[in-house]
Image 1 (cartoon, rainbow, N blue to C red):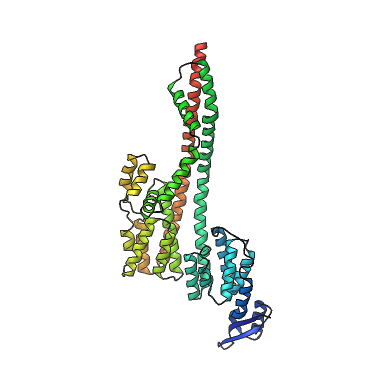
Image 2 (cartoon, rainbow, N blue to C red):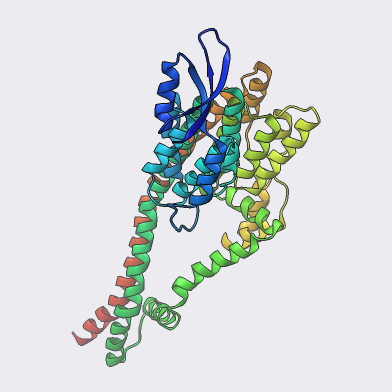
Length: 442
């Protein structure tokens, strides 16, 4: 029969430490309660847990590739917060949730976490050994919850943070599905017309041996190019993607690409505001959870996903260490400087020399406006930094949703017009020679 060691409080408030034999942890808790004690901590004796771990380490694990699905992790966090709020021991809560998980990375990680906790580790230490499932933000918030004795509150905040982040991603991705599908279908149809339909008309025109209009000649040349270089249609976007991936492996290349993306017309605003919303919500959640401000800034910097924001938060971190506030360095270092690689991308992807001119006009625009810095300043003065950061994040979430909806409203008629012009050009170019031939025959 397993032996459990427990810490409990008696009716006078004195702490009791003892061991008890019981078939399961639940029955051990019931026996202790019948003895008149209130259980504060209980675990199987380390010797037995270590022996069990040695004999069954890795049992029940499935082979997996990659990390944990964010949606699955969000659901797990919400369920764990509910179980902790109900007063269940952390190990039992984890065992319950581990049993509910489908075979995958999260289930494997939970098996390891449970084994480490049984061996005497804390929850945050156990989770830190599974970085593919629980990142630094997650682990540090759990550590803050353990230190403050409010793990259920921290888990609830973490679940809310993940749910809002996932909600924003779903809105942006959902809004972009329609234009992407339309573009892909249009490219497929136009390619089919150029490869199959136009060559058939060319054979007809050769039989009549007549002079063709300039539009028809242009269409035939485009069709011949696509037929001869058909492989370039999928190769060009893949080549551009590989080129960008290669450039981003270097520090200067990553800085240039990230500056290029956040300064793009319309799309850049969505990317920039999305990052502002995500980073301010991350920082606000960490501060509200009791994570030290320097550690919170480090985590926010690492999870920003953009070189310019990483640079800004690094400067804020350095200023805080020297006794400065957050608002002043945020205002000072949120203005990008000239970057040659960013200018190259503008030249390459945005209309050559015109792209360079646009970049030079926009390169010094701040990535964080006065609204953010002023609210952060007020939050520091009043001691409600986390509240102000939450408000900034909510405001920018709303702006991203509005911008995305406006972009889709603009793209729909624009795509229809562009497709109409292309199809009209093809139809006119193909039928002009036929009309001329009919007139001659008449």
